[in-house]
Structures are given as C-alpha cells and as structure tokens.
Length: 300
Image 1 (cartoon, rainbow, N blue to C red):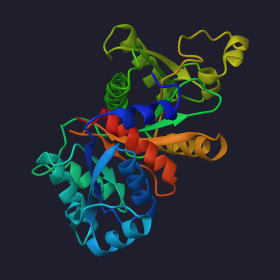
Image 2: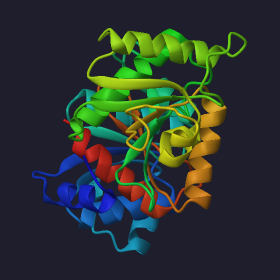
Image 3: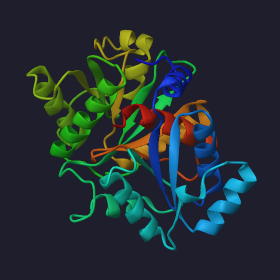
Image 4: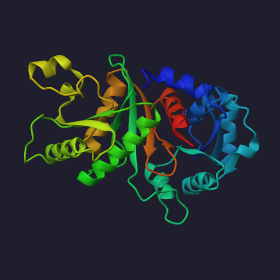
C-alpha cells in the first residue's frame, strides 16, 4: 500500500533494470517532458514513435540526450500506435504510453485481432488518486474507456482493479460501488448491480476483496456522515477503489478531484497483455510523470 505518490516514485527510481516504454505518437510537449524526466530519473528507457524530425526538435529543446535509434519515424497516429504495439509484441518494450492521438486509435491497435496485444478480456481505465485529506492512494474506474458497463463488465473492471492493486502491494482490496443513494431502488439499475456485486463478493466470487454498495460518495469517505446515517461498512474511510456507475460520473469525478481537491493523478489502462499509460491531454506534466512511474511498477 502506498501512502502517496512520493513513496511510489522512490520505489520506481530504485527498481532495476529500467523498463523500456513505447510511446505512440510522441509529439506532445507535455508527454515528452514527462518522458524526459522519467528517463533522467532512471525509471524508463523510452522508444518514441511518431514524426521523427518533430520529436527530435522537442526533445532537443528539453535537453533530452536520447540516442537517435530510439526515435522511430511514423507519419500518422495509426502507424505510430501500430509500431508501438508491435514493440511490445516482439519484446522490445514492456509497456505503452499514449501520446498525441485519440484513445480510440490507441485501443484499435491494442485490440487488433492479428497484431494487437488484447487478451480477450475487458480493457478498462483506472485513475489513481492521492488526496491531501486521505491516507493512501485509491483508484477509480471507469472514466475514459467503458461508457455504460453492464453487470458482467463491472465484474471484469473489478477483477482488473484487484490485479492492479495487488501488484501495488494492497492486500484485501476494499471496493465501493458508487451510486447517489445507499438503498437499493428497482428504478436505479446501478443500485441493483451494486447489490448483486456485494452478494457475489460475500460468496467469494470476485476474488480477494471486500465490496460494499450501493454507496454515495460521502459514505465512502466521511465517517461522521456514515455514523449519522447509521451506515456500517468496512469500506467507509478505508476505500481502495471506487467502481463508478458509468463513464460520465467517472470522468466528472476524476476532473473534480484534480481541479478542485488538489488531487495528484495517474492514469492507466489495464486488461491488455501490458499496462498502458493514459492521461487526458489536459493533465499536467506531473500527472503524466506519475502515470509512467505507476505503470513501470506494474509492467513485466
């Protein structure tokens, strides 16, 4: 378990040997600034795919002493994504990072039936957050990839999350199935899903976790609110992972935490043969750097 990202970054810096990361469409100043910092800190050894001359100009301005053979020319985002995925397939890289291209383009290359790195399971995005007011890093899914997950898809999202947090040293993962209410309402499908998932968890069908729900956000984090409402849960005040009802709520909450709660954020896509660094174009260099550090600890 990590108290904050500072702890995780120090572990990533100390890990040897450095893992190779393939960056698809590496033409973004913020992406390359984060990659440059992670390279200098000894966290990753990058392979950059994209328009070679443009990449060279950016890394030159950043003072990044990267050998030219580690910059592979690709004139379109589609080609860059395909070549980056191929680098993972042939063992040249341990994991991927999304650069200046749409998530859909990246995932199309990842899930290509002939040349991709899909596993046949569900691909989901997990946002990792560190809040000044909370005692540990926690995760949230899905705010970027899966629009409206049904019950079976939520089961796969949970299993992806358990795998990620287990790799990070968390033991019995505490999961909150979020809703706007804490009582099951037949007119609210997310509450019915939460009830079904809770029952499955109690039967041991979801893996090494404790799951409660439906849970509103305040009952997840505010122990006083839970006391007032007489809501007893092992998850309250100790959640590791928030299962969001849909992409809308997940995306909004992620951005609220980042913009208004001073949250540090890392983003990762899981469910393929390797983890993928993925953050919004609007996130900071720091967030992208933290995402690289997180995924480097999960890869290979």
